[in-house]
Each structure stands twice: as structure tokens, then as C-alpha cells.
Length: 464
Image (cartoon, rainbow, N blue to C red; front, side):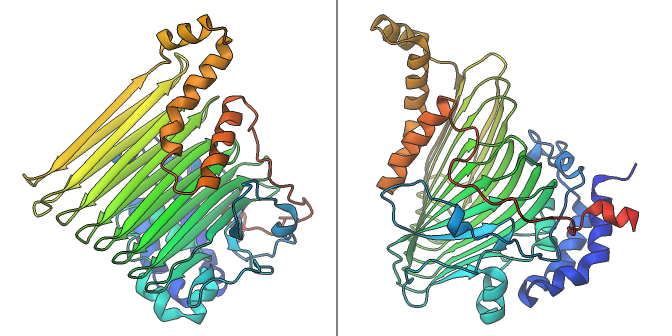
């Protein structure tokens, strides 16, 4: 039987010219190296320590369609997607599958010099800018998914904020998965904040059709000196969606970055976050929340590298697991020998609402400096029976009491959000999720008119 990788090796070999034709030279330049790395590494399996809770390779076995020929999708998401975060004025952009939607764009002007647009187009218009950063953090020699994504990605998003520019308006990017066959997308996001720049980005993932989706995603974030950047990721897909996302962040001196990833509804999610604190005084706040039931799985793997002195990291992840769902968290904080006066705190708290739910947690501290303040802790437990009894004795029904306790449990993660309108909206969405009212995205009704009969799939290479 052919191994999982071979079908994609054959596909790339036969379609490399097509892939490059529909992309930009800057994105094409590292393809050959990335493909060679993928051939050597293959997809991650549970035999690797870093992936021991999620067998990523098995999710690539099915026959997925890929839009390598970049067929246009005849739909205007601005007409059919209604953002449901009231009181939040955002500049709204879309990626449909893995293509930036540029036929209609928001009317509000961004500050002078700020770029938000198609990675392919910006790489053609500003090749030196993109070349300086693209692929610099996402090392294809170390991770098979990053290598695969770099070999196949043709477009994505670039967000560039020049020196000392403040983007007051929150940018919202909606990733829409839409197809009528089992479908794979490979997204790229490149975020560059120069010294003193400030911006906020909200990324929402939605799946429109009840087919099997597989999304790989690589995000690179560069935060210059004194830059301030908030990035919120909100996943609201469905149980037939697999998302594998690798996020790489590099922070210079006195930069402040907040990352908050929230999984409200999904199938299988594997998020890897790697943060390098490269300049003194840098601060990272890394937060995450997962609510899972049925057979859903959420796996977060994080590493924070304190490479220089006087940096701060705060990490908080919380999971609520119901039914037969599975959660995993592995977090490494590395303090290098010269990184004196490091202040680091890592917390992972987990609630298993049933006996069948499973949580695997692996907090790790590696400290090679002696003048530091570092702590880490993890708990896995069930709802507090005493609190439940108290609430029921006050006339609150058991179902409502359980819901209130779970809601209070995840509230701490929502409260890290530095955007009041989004915080309010998340409180409502989480409550709906616990009440079972969030089984599919409510925001959109993408039209079904597009046909995907011409999409390439790895199995096509077997038949041809």
C-alpha cells in the first residue's frame, strides 16, 4: 500500500509548474527546498514526542481536492456573510478556502503605508518586503506540516504596519471553507509590525459545507521594538473539519504581544505556537480556550523561548471537555543561560464533564539561568460537587447550575481580551455553545452554485 506522503510527492512532481504559475516568485523561491524537506520528514506521527497526542499523518490519507489551478469561486462573501460581533467596527476581509478575496474590499481606508491584502499580489508589488520576512520563522527543515504548506501554498494574507503607525480599527479576517467535495486548503499569513507599530487582528474560521475539510495554516508574526499586537483566533467550524495550524512569533525589545486562540466548535484541531523573545523587555501573553464534546479533539502545543534577559511570559489555557472528547496541552518554557530576570507563569486548567472525556497535559520548564521567577501548573478535574449542591439548594436546576459553573471556569480566558465588544460577544457565544446552540456557523449562507469538478486531487495522479 502506498504511504500517505507518496500521493502528495507525486502530485507536487506533476503539478509544480501549475502551482508556481498561480503564485508569486517570492513564494516559489523556497518551494523546492520545502518539498525536499517534506520528502525527508514526511507528515508527523505519534512516534514524535511533539505530536504524541495527535496522529497528524492519518488526516492526510483521504482523497482531497486541491484548487491548484486557482479556479475562481463565484460568490461575494461581503453579500452573504454578516459579521455577528455587534458594536465592533472592523475592517473586514475574507479568505475563501486559501485565496484572498479581492474583488470587493472594505471601504474604510487604512492608515498610510499599511498593507493588508493578498500575499501573492503584495509579493509581486513589494517583492523585497515580502522576501525579507517570508519563511524566515517557519523553518521547513524542522516540521513536516510547515514544509508541506510551504511547498503547496499559493496565496494567503500579508499584514504590514510601518514604523510608529497605529491602526486604530480592528482588522477582521474571516477564513471560509467552501466546497462540494472533500477539500484541502493550505493557507499562509505573514504579519509584520515595524518598530512602534500597533494593531489588532481577529481571525475567524468557518466551514460552510458538510464535506470533509483539511486546512493547513502557517502564520509568521514579526513584532518590532515597542510594537503592540493583539491576535485573536476564533474557530467555529464543524465536526468534519481538521485544522493544523503552526504559528511562529518573533518579538524584539519592549514589544507586547497578546495571542488568544479559542476553539468553540471543531472536528480535530492541532495548534502549534512557537514564540521567540529576542529583545529585552518583550512580553508575551499567550492564552487559549477549548470547548469540546462528541468526539472532538483539541491539541495545543506551545513553546516560549526566553533568549534574552528581562522578558515576561504569561500563559493560560483552559479546556472544558464533554462526552468522548479529547484534549491535549503541552507547553514548554525555555529560559536560556543569559536570560536573567525572566518572569514566566504558565497555567493549564481542565474540566472533564464526563468520565469518558480525556485530557493529556504536559507543562514543562527548562531553566538554565539562576535569577528568574518561573512557575507552572496543571490541573484536571470535574465540576465542584459542593458548588453544584449549593446552587441546587438555592433553587437552580442542575443543568443550569452545571452550565454556570462551566461558564465561570472559562471566563478567565475571555477576560484577557483587550477589546470590549469582542469580549461581550464571546461571553454570549460561549453560553450558546454550552447550551448546544452553536452546532454550525450562524453568520453566513454561502451560495452553493460553484462546481468543483476541475479540482486536482492526489488520486488524480494515480489515474493519469
